[in-house]
Length: 249
Image (cartoon, rainbow, N blue to C red):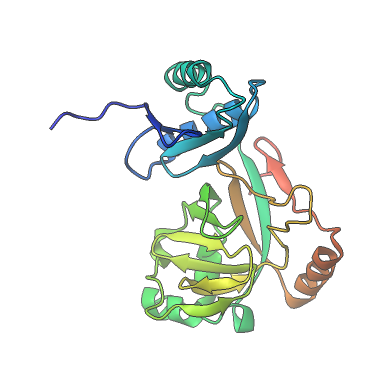
């Protein structure tokens, strides 16, 4: 079988082109996807509607009645294979996610502790110990799939998913962690909740996080949770965003 060569440019209908960088979950591959997405969004070419990143590829949606497909494909091929959008050289952007762990907001913290044979306090400590990389957004608007969690707290999904999980819930599924962006069904192990709304369709921007960014979980108490929840409801809360080279853990 002939080995696939990357990057690959594929047609997906008459208004979408997909650029693939590989076939595995890999931070190096994903950083190229994120860099290409940022580069495409910065283009002044007419007809580009949206970019949708995944773990290993970028979909570029365009209006075929407005865009010049041949010109677009040629430009994307040059960007993908050349230096315009190689591995990202930009500094890290880190969104801080204040999180109340355990109790009613983290009903599965005991499950994770039992599975990993750690105390609940140690699970919290290890979950908040590492900045986690946002590979992609999906499932629901703004739901971040985060890699880089301490693998010693990896825990399988629930055998029986919940019909409704409150937005802001922080969960663990295998080696990944994530934040439920809206109320939705789901099967991740819930260990805490952030009071901020990472997705709000009425807000500008509607999503605080994007693929290629990092998330830093910061444990908080109930008083701070309630304070941030009130600001989020009023639409005045904005998360702390740390640029690489700024305050570090």
